[in-house]
Length: 72
Image (cartoon, one colour):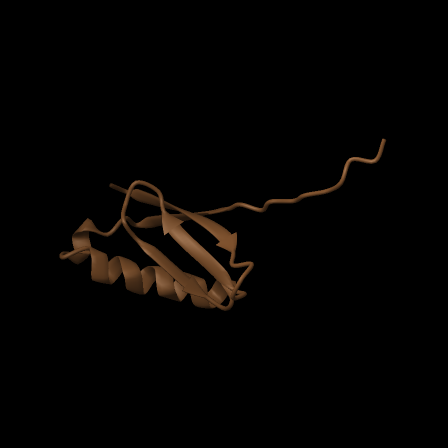
C-alpha cells in the first residue's frame, strides 16, 4: 500500500479533530491539525510492525457537515 486515506472531522463534543483511516483500523485525535498529523504518524508506527509497510503518502480527507434551516 503506497497511500492511506484518513477521514478527518471536527470533534463537536470535545473540540479538536478526529482522524479515521479508511479500510484500516486506525483512529486518532488531537487539538490542532499540526498535532493531528504528528498523531497520525505515531499511530502508523504503532499499527504497522515493519516501517517499510507504512504507506508513504498520507491523504487527509476533511469532512464538514453544515446544517441550515429552510426558509420558505
